Length: 275
Image (cartoon, rainbow, N blue to C red):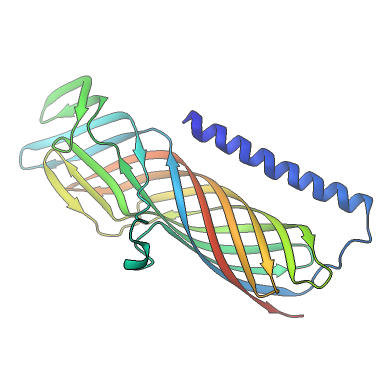
């Protein structure tokens, strides 16, 4: 958690500094490069790496052995990039991002963006965590080894964020021939969680289906390089809070929430209109 907060604050400090530089430069020199007018569509595809804060998993349900209602506290988790055989697997197997946006005011740098972020969340196995609640009529309140025989839990197909964001672009540099442009972007937004959760709780396995399981809110700061007006490279850092309230397990549900820090890199295509 400390690592996530530290990286998040450092990243937003950099973005804030870049924004201040741009605002100051424009105030001092009103004869800067000519801004584009009109609007544009864009689409981009890329991949991501992720870090997660600790979270409390709350399991409720029943199986042939009886009912249960217990929490596993301060669970740690990691991502699963699946990039080892990148050229031998479908492009949707690794952790990927698909973004489609519309810049409705190119001159002032405003737009909206829809995104599908395919993250993966894997609970660390074989760690000792505190378990509190009731299992088959027996109270439990003690440190317990969380082995796969007790609880194994992951959103690996995946921890999917479907989001709609407002986009604000700040042009940092633009060449006179408009062939190259560097921009900073800030994108606050929110949406829903649609995971395919794979779990084994008290020996009973459940895999999927894809299911609406909660909401997510977050903000992304990024840098973009536009090339020859129609192509661009993009990198971003997103801080988001995921609230899983309707997660599916075997004959039951799981609730948890966590902070995620996502780094993404992508390439895209611009489609200018209205020029």
